[in-house]
Length: 378
Image 1: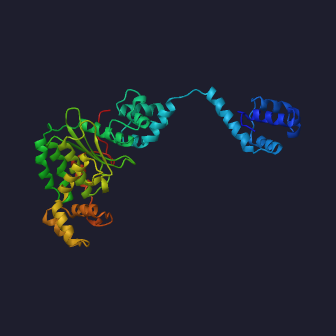
Image 2: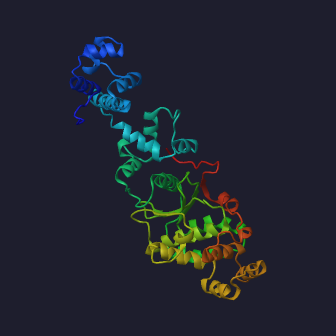
Image 3: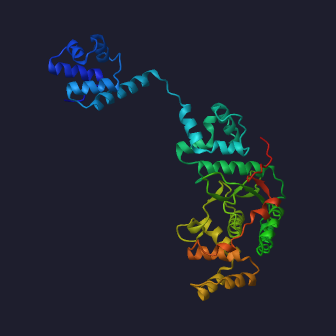
């Protein structure tokens, strides 16, 4: 039997004809009225699970076949009577890709009731500087799988927009490449203790670099970014996803190198999961990132010195050796520990030296997150 029927009624009518039955005979067999059978066959009455089971016994056909036809018929009928709502896909993309509740909690968007969808759409459109909800960048990303920030995900894009909002409110001198180059030795002098990092925001600002801390959004996995404002002013934004001395200085120097190289002018340099292979210099690492990684590694620990240290001490690295090596170069042992962990691919080692540092940096930096909301014009 060919499945030419599109409704349960068409199937039932075909089965009746095969048996030479009338609708009245079926009504008697099922114990229902002829009118009920007539309406089912005419498609004016739906069959339920109980009727499907009864028909299955009468015709020796699986009840699922009747139910599948019923569901298919109902869906086809709904397509005719239900108007397409293009806003549903837009809302699914918006609420499915952005942590709306977190953005509202942190003051990024102003929404009184998250259940008021139109209000949320308007607030998010305002956040992204879009004239309408249809033009919100993350929705275009969801549809096209690309956006203005290259490889940035929708959540990372939101983080970047927040960082840009804050950076535009900051006031720093005109940026100077030479001043930033001269700032690097000054930053290097801060590596001996976590408390010294409090001077980093001021040193960068004096070179014309806007430095800020923006707490990462859930699942963004972002460590930092380098981008430029319209007035050719560079911005270094960090998420401090890992509150560790080694990670802070590596990411900071990494982003500073992006600035020195002029990276991120056309689209932001987004550095996510900047550990492991992403912090390496292999062939799989993009050239811009490789250059930044080389500069960051050398800044944290002179690499020739580290090579010699590993050659002499491997495979056993005593605590006194790490501390002595760091002291001789006036750097914190955590920086040595961080570089060793990367070189050895042993992320379980030397954890005691990886001290926290945000407590020292945040008081002198522009901060958004961790309970603080940076003042921006909305």
